[in-house]
Image 1 (tube, rainbow, N blue to C red):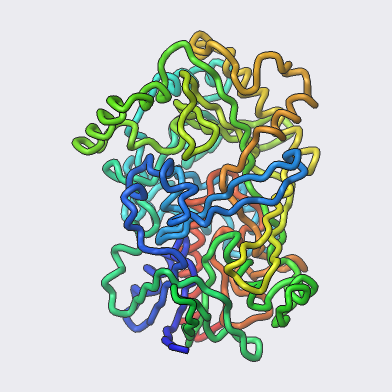
Image 2: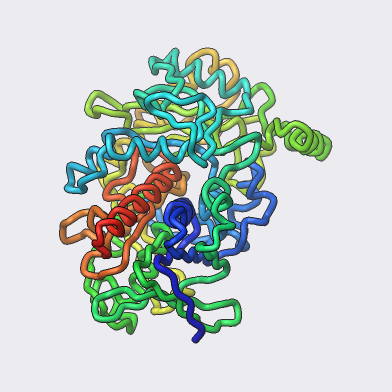
Length: 540
């Protein structure tokens, strides 16, 4: 087999991996290899904000995962898009920049993860950020990740924000600032009308460094473990030939909440019984690999309108051409749109100290991205539970990483989760009854007005039948020190030297919001930990 080597080998060129490649290669004496299973981010739709309509479910850039039939969703299966391209899921996502709540990270620290409290991670969020609004105690302006305000406004979303305030929820101009609670408008990872993926923000500026090698179309089959130490990885090229990439220092898995545990298990690191059942030699029995899976489940309510929405704007070829021309000439209009325009972070009651639901409000409606909008005027209120108690699992069925693992989300499996999703649906419908939004709604389409808000079981069953993932899988390589932990607080795989994990899989608990900004922060944190250990001579 052909063999190359570096000090650090990063597996996965996504949200965290691109940050790591940039930070580690800043020192010209450190040799870095970044490996990405997908290709270069050359698809033009990646760089157009609204391009997620074209890239999600596109096998050339999306892994196109699908869950197993889920009992909590009345046996339905869900699509789980994940980026298979430089930039990872930050090249496909809805561009929404959300950090979560300070309490999320303080909770991580309270669980024994020293150095992960809010005061520890806020400087990392600021370091990576170039905030259009300017610098303050919560935001930075010198980072590579462009964070901007919405370039698109639509009256129906403005009406939703006003109606939410009429319903008693405060306006909040910056949910990434002093307080998350309230309603307002999303910030997005874009600049001048173009997507700012992690590859654009962090990899492009580092690409010409002679000490950084970027391998694309290089899916890793396994990490190599010799005498309890990770020495490198094996990958297959397009012809099926295997190659070795040796790590003189460390291997860092940044392949996401599905990819990282999948690679670990196929390498012999995981629950012994599951590995042996698939003919894999056990290198280290680590029970928690693939466990602790968490995701945000969204109930998508659709309301028909008595005035035009984006559904109407994109229906004719003439309008589509006009929208394309506006974008080409001015980088403006609907093609600059993130996945949602308005948002709200709210409490479902006095029993919670911080918001436990989040809204994503869209001036259009569709059964799913990529399938086209509905043939009528409508908008969408999506509501998700921020901190689900339900826990799922990733399971392998083969020793070959080319065979997809089975994804068991285990949605709505606790009473708290069920009550929260029902409360969220009822809050959404209540907002729809307040001015100025109420006068714009002609019909409750999904669910229909026939479903009483007093009908708990009926509302829950509707949620089971119509809810979908908001694409935030996390937690499958849990950070901590208990029997279910996979990595310690320095992101080192427990029991294996020379191997770390740095992506959303390390979250002990999912953050209260969208996960791309936290993934980038995890890449920043991991780079600091690695460089600190290197400078101290404490090579893991």
